Length: 326
Image (cartoon, rainbow, N blue to C red; front, side, top):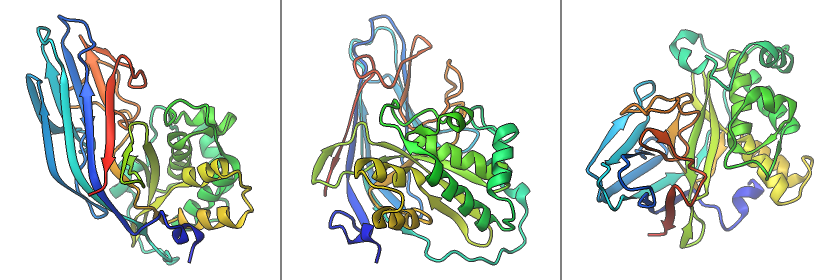
């Protein structure tokens, strides 16, 4: 059994209530305020239930991002609003994911069926230096599984977690190949871009970590991990960022038994202390935002008179997320 799973804090599933409170009342009077929030839904690995939305908004609805179907909650307040508050609460049960031994034999597959996961993004090109590096890493690897594993190992061996990075990072791949330190979006984006450059369908997943205590503030617990598509098997999680986080937090070397086990665990496995909120890069929301396409939708997004707010600014863009065990 992996050391990771032997720790008392880890479990096969995690359940609780997540409450997201937003208060944009600090914005000047006479300004129109619009808010977009990643909206959780059930999938094979998580169940979302008992969703409640309340607030003093003038209008609110659930939409999806046209390009990839990511759900979102939208709300708006007209200029005459004196208070701008919204609460989103739901219950989540999240399963641990462990794909086990992945099949080496690769059936015939059509890459055009996964074209959207093989294209570049604004900060994740798949040509030039990225393509050159991907070819070097995967030289002699003939299957999707072999190429994806080689890229995963390269990412763990060559990147590091930089605690000075703001939030989860931007995922600017070319910059990161020069300075390979960042946080989860940075590390996952490098993995995804290299995979795509090597012909492996891949994508980032944006979510929120769940607390391990009976009740915790999880406002800043956003997390990004990655998945690649394995023909004949399906989508497989890979989280090199959490391997590198453990190295930093626990002050361990890559060769330590703990990190060796975590490297194996997060290849095809992820813990139950997280849930998915969104996916995709360069997103045009619905209703369409006035600002530029979103690099990621891992955080809530708001505009005041069509000017984007900084979601890292806790004084200007006020929100709080909490987890409570049920």
